[in-house]
Figure (cartoon, one colour):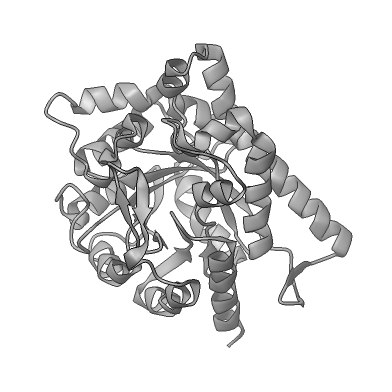
Length: 338
C-alpha cells in the first residue's frame, strides 16, 4: 500500500520504534552468492542470479533473516531494463525480473515468518524474543553500477551524462520497483551529487508513493567518491520528503564515524550505515583487494560508536556476511537489554 506525505515521514520512525529504536540491515549479497559457487563476473553481477539461480537468491535472504536482519535488500542493485536487454532479454522479461527480485525477497520473508509462527518465536543465541518486524527494500544501484566499469566507486560519468540522462535511465526501473510490493526503495552507493538530485527529482516527478532512502559512498571520510561534499549530498536527501533516511554504504568502516557526524549537521532523518569490510575494489581486475579488510569481530566493534554518534540502522555491504550481521544483531540486542 502506498503512503501519503505525512505517513511517509513517520514510516521509518514507527518501524524503528517496533524494533526497539535500532534496526539491522542485511549484509553482502554477491559475497554470499559467490560463496555458494556462483560466478558473478558478469555485467549483471548479482542480478544474474535472478535469471539463473533464484533459489540461491532466496536462500541468501533467509540466511540474513536467520542472522537477525530487520531489512532485506533485493538482488536488483545491478538489475536494469537496459542491462537485461543487453543480455538478449525482451523488455517484458526485463521488467518481470525486476518485479521478481521483490517477489523472491517476499517469499523469503514469508518462509521466515512461517518458521517463527511454528516455533512461536525468533531464536537468537537460544533466547526467545518477540517476532521482529521485517521490511523489504528494493535496491536501485547507480548508473555506474549499470556501466559495470567500477565507476560507482569514482562517480566520474563524464560530461555527457546530464541530470536528464540519469533521470531517463532510472525512470522505468523506479516505476516498476515502486509498484512491486516492496516496503521502500533503497538508492544505494550514490557516488555524486548529480545522481542524488536525479533520484530526488524522479521521486517527485513520478509521484512515487513508497518511502526511499539515499545511501552514499566515500573513500576519504569527508566527501562522496567523486569529491562532492557529503553534507551537500545529504542535504538533497533531507530536502526530499519522499526520503525517510540517509546514510552511507560500501565504505570502509574507519570512515563511518566522521561521515555520520557530517550527515547529522544537515538532517534529522534517521541515519543508516552499512559499510563494506574495508577492502578496496579494483575496477580493472574486477575483484576486491583483501589486504585492508577487517575481521567480523573488528567490524562489529565499531557499531556501538556509530550508534552513539547518531546512527540507528546498521548492516554490511560488500564482503560482509551473515556472521557480520549476526554480530551486529547481538550487539544491538545487548544494548537494548541494558
